[in-house]
Length: 517
Image (cartoon, rainbow, N blue to C red; front, side, top):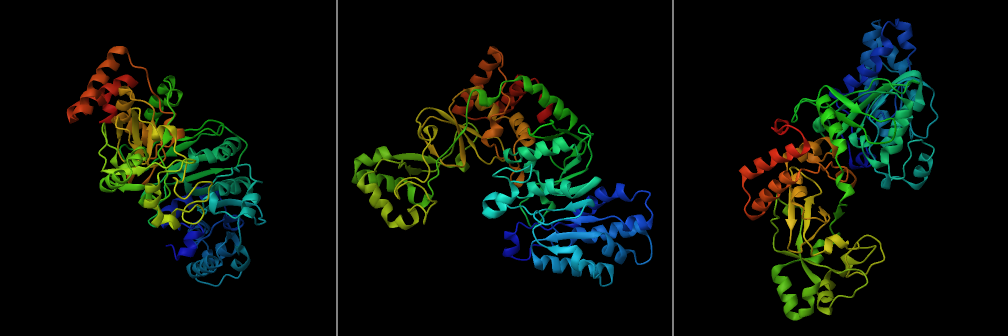
């Protein structure tokens, strides 16, 4: 229930009861077991990002039921609840919501629920910390706030704000205290969360990671997970994980590949973990190839032109032809061969002045092209592409293209000198085995388990993840058979050959084709 654009800018994602209830039970259940009513009222529970009070109400509900006494809701709210939020309106609303739920005024909430930055406040120690911290990208943080975050062990210059709340939960807890926090799944594998993973590994506190369905938060494009545990000094405590039911496979029983370091953590069921561990013996794609991005123009409506415009410019000045290349976007990439529209790109690199005809063509859009006003600041001219053009992007040698956001495997071979945009990744290769892998259902199986998620079931094969793709070296006969089928697919794709290639790729990886059926 996002109230306004101002609230959205604070990184607020309000939490539905379907999420708050089990989180509160997970955090507080072990703390109330065997406790007397007076011992329950002695518990101190903190929500460090209270929003409009969703967790607070559930905390009161749960502890009041455990207390079981007369006027339990009011007593629990007065004695046990603590929290903060940077938004004073949210704090006022949360106080009112809790009082309405308790059925009485609760003066203690005026001091126990505070307005302020939870990461900077002076806090007492708590028995439990529960919450949904703000999701704010680092580039939106004020310089002073960034400097203050350097005191955290999990600090990374490009880390999102929620990272520090996971460490804050540990700072706020008494020994043996419990936490349960919902955050994006990005921290499990993102490079910026390496210090956080190392911190959690040293703390040995994580008991469970549960990945929620993307639809858990109706108002946000979130891929959340619940992280729960208890402060302790044992670094090898059992760690379990769970994925939502309803995807390709039931992953409700999962293990967590958690090295005692800052390396990526993964949620895998036992069979998946066994298969992926077996692939560790294979070379990685990054040992042979380094993915490169396509071009960033900063203003496609200026630099991307139609066939008719290209013909007109070349007719006016034949020298323009060398500056104009066929253009391709991520949505044009298909399995085997791309299906581009007739679009062309003015490849105006830095440091070289294009023909006068091309500059005249761009001149009406000069205000939109100026660095720092129309486009991002930089040391480039208004008629140049915004970012330097990489060698692979402008190469005319055969290359493989795949999409930055993939809903299904799609890798195209380019032999026509297309220049792709930034929604396309490029490999300096025409190896039919590599293309067969990247078009296979087994690759899709791997991608869903190792690449960051995107909307509608898609994945993001970013460079650092793709470079870790296991790439076996098949026997010569198997490689030759795959190459022959790929050549046939490039000439005329056929579904039956796709199925045959899927089976052969499974054989190359040493797994049964039943894995992908």
